Image (tube, rainbow, N blue to C red; front, side, top):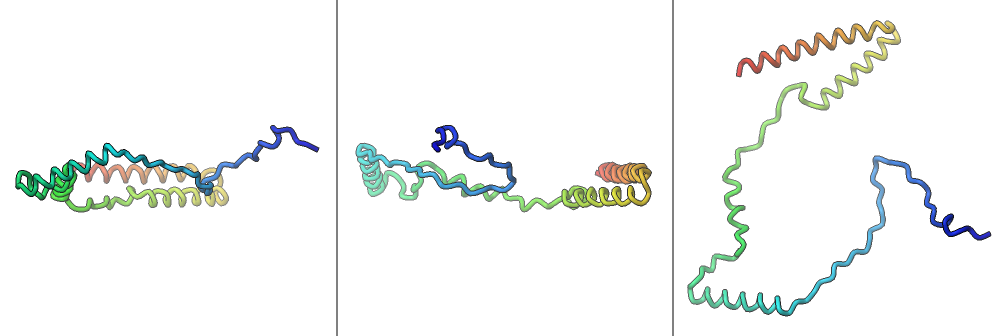
Length: 144
């Protein structure tokens, strides 16, 4: 039994994944071209520079005609040190994630043992904690 051509080209659907799967490497060759005119120009330029250095018309220090080295030499002079991390407890995403996790655990166990009233208690608790946090944050900004 022969299958039609359309049936042969069907590939199974791929499920989305958060992991990267390896794929075969593709063959990609970048051809190099030989330019005899460009090579001759570079050779003559280097020979003329060498002659000018021997005559003393240009300095021998100028190894980099594009000027890349000058920017690198001065770039470290503006170094101001490593920026200190913010030590605020609530600025850490891991801490916020942990607080949310424990809130969900408290809500689920509270719902099992107390009932739907736990959401009211947790809401009041969250509002009080938020108010205290913003009070101290505003108080700290007032000192500056």
